Image (cartoon, rainbow, N blue to C red):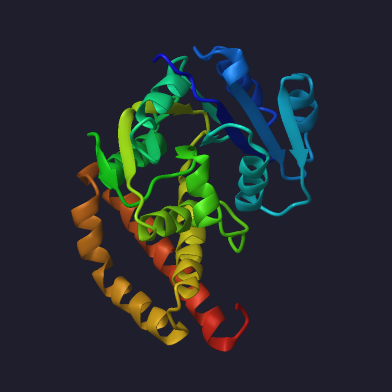
Length: 286
C-alpha cells in the first residue's frame, strides 16, 4: 500500500472493564501509521471502571452519552471521525495487527467491507453453536452479502453520510446492523464479506445468553419490519407461519449435535416475534 487513508475505529462501550484492555492493546499493535489512525470510544453510561480504563489512554477520544444504546453510540462515534474510512468493532473484541491495513486495501475498490468473528475458545457447546451459526449465515468464502454484524464492519465515511448512519430506534444490540446494511444495499452499495479480515471475540458464550439474544432479536426484527412499513397483522400472521416451520428450520439449519439448542433458539426467536407483534397490535409499541 503506497497511500494510507486515514482510518477511524469506532467502539461503543458499556460495562466492559473485563475486556476493554484487550481491545485497546490490540489497537496499539496495529501495523498502520499512527498518524493515519484514530480511535473514538463512546461510552453508554457504564457503571463499572470502563471509562476510567479508557481515560488512561490519551490517544483515544472518549465520548460520554446517557444510556441510549449502541446504535446511538456508533452514530456519535462516526460523526466525530476525521478518517475517510470508519471501522466499527466492539469492546469485547481483539483485532490482529494487519486488520486496518487489510480493510484499507479492500476499501480502495469497495464501499463497505466486513469480516469474520472468531471466538476466543470453541470448547463449550455454546461457543461451538454460535460459531457454526455464523458460518451458516455468512459462509467461509469471500463474497458479496446483504448484511454483516457491526463488530467487524468498515465503511467509507461518505457512505455512512449518505445512508444517515444507524437507526436509533433500536435501543438494544440486535437488529441495528441489519437495518443499516439493508439501507446501504437499497441505496445501491455492495457489502463485501472477506473472512480473512477477522476479529477475536472474548464474549463468553453460554446457553442462557444465546437464548436471551434469540428472544431479543425476535422482537427487534419485528421493529425493523415495522419501520419498513409492514403492518402488525401481517407480522402476527408471519410469526404464526414461522412457528409451523420451526421443526423444518431446525433440521435444515443445525448440525445433529446442535439440534436441541437450535430448536430452543428458534422457539425463543418465535416468542420474541409474537411478543413484539402483539405489542404493535394493541398499540403498546409504536
